[in-house]
Amino acid sequence: MNFKDVRIGKFGFINNFLPYFRLEQKGVPIIEASPKELAQMFEKGKIDFAPVPSFFYIKNKERLKSHDFCVASKEKVLSVIVVSSGEMPCDDNGCIAVTDQTTTSLNLLRIILRERGMKNRVVSVNESRAGELLKHCDQALVIGDEAIRARMTYRVVMDLGEQWHKLTGYPMVFGISVSLREKDMTEIDRMVMESVRWGRKNIDTVVAEAEKKFNIERNFLELYFKSLTHCMGASEKRGLELFEEKCREHGLL
Picture 1 (cartoon, one colour):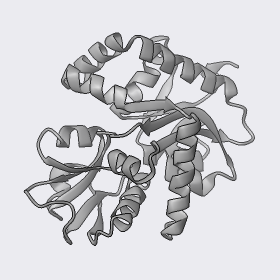
Picture 2 (cartoon, one colour; picture 1 turned 60 degrees about the vertical axis):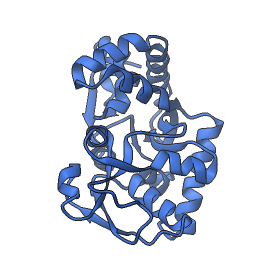
Picture 3 (cartoon, helix red, strand yellow; picture 1 turned 135 degrees about the horizontal axis):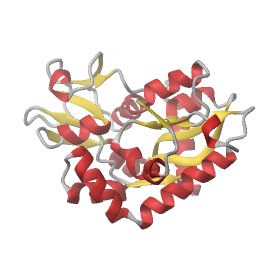
C-alpha cells in the first residue's frame, strides 16, 4: 500500500506526539486535528485511518473497524482532569463546567460522579480553556494539552483515568484507531504501531524534541508518556467494553 494515497490522522495533542514521531520524521503526511474534528472527518469521508474518541467508536462500531493503536491510560492519565479555582473539594454539590470538545471524557465524568454518588451538576460550555470554563463553575473538566497547562495553574481535584482505574481496575481507553469496515488499513496500523515501538525504545529522543516543541518540563513529559499506553491489549479491550457497559447502564447510549 502506498501511504501517500491514505489520509492518516492523529490527535493534535501531546498524547499523540510519541506515537507519530517516527512516522513524521520519515515524511509520512499526517492530518492533525482535535478528537472531535477527526470524528467529524470520518462522518464526511475525509479521512481513512485515525484515532477517534471511544464514545464515537462505540456509537458507530457497526460501520467502523478498530485497530491496535489507541490512546489509553494505565492509571492516572494526567491530561483529562477536573481542576478548581479554589479550595472546594470535588465531592460537593456544585457544578463542573465541561468543554464541548469532548464526548468520551464528558460521559466518563458522568459515570464516575454517579458511581460515587456525587451530585455535581455538569454544564457544557463552548470553551476549551480552563480559565474561561472556570468563569461558569468553581470546577472545570479540561482535556489534552489545555489540561496539562491548567494543572500548572489550578488545583487538580480529579484525574479521570485514576478514578476509572479505581472503579474498574482496568485502563481507560480515551481514543481508538479506526477505519471504515470496507477499507483495509491493516498495513497502516502496522506502520503506526512500529512508530509507537520506536518511540518507546527512543523515549529520550522523543522527550527532548517534545520539550523543545511544547516548552514543557522534561520530567513531566517523561512521566506523561509513561502513563499512557498506545496498544489495544487484552486489558485495554476489557476497559473499553466496561466503558460501553457503564454508558448503557447509565443511559448515556
